[in-house]
Length: 274
Image 1 (tube, rainbow, N blue to C red):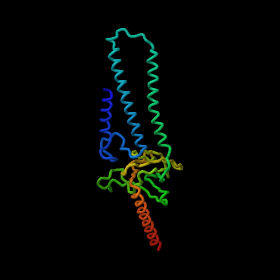
Image 2 (cartoon, rainbow, N blue to C red):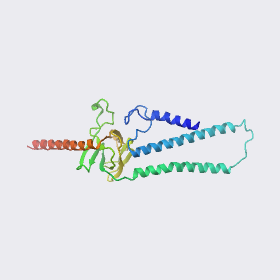
Image 3 (tube, helix red, strand yellow):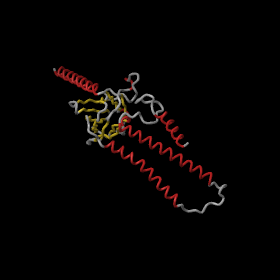
Image 4 (spheres, rainbow, N blue to C red):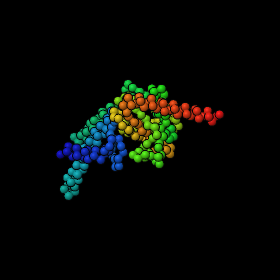
């Protein structure tokens, strides 16, 4: 009976927690986004495991409280017990929480290790936080770099979410171990991508690192998660995950686009000087 209640509760919560369209924000959404990386999948699994334990403990304690209220009410026990301690109970209510904490600690330590230890990387990107935009650099792609700004609400196209749309997306290949180097150019920022299980502070003068492996093609959205001034809510992060072939084609097209832009700027500057 208890098992059926737990399964029904988890199903009920998951029905309201996850969006019907992967990675898209829905009204009344409560839970995590659909995981798109091994780290986020581990976070989601640990969350569900802890949710089951919390639910079981809560129901058990509620049943105990109801039992005590009914069994030891004044009308049923006009003469209260003089018992001051119970050796077996004291051992149980000390040992059982220890066992529960051990069951929670083992997967927690495993997750922390998975997040902190970076496997052999296939590529590296560098993320620099500014007030209030992001700068992305690709050291492995001839130092390709560009800036990513929020698109104002009045310039949004149909279907583009407010405060979560940028002019230049961070394009990355799927199924690659990607090292992410994170820093800031002015104040504290925080690079956060919920669907990938990534959240790392960007500190001026310091280079933090994390990693990600995107397993699904798609568009993933995040934001600066630090109070970095008046504009942290206007620093969205948009990652577009594509196949390796499309990524290489995007790199070449982006290099050509910025090269043409630089050439036009140089020509315009020469004309102004003349």
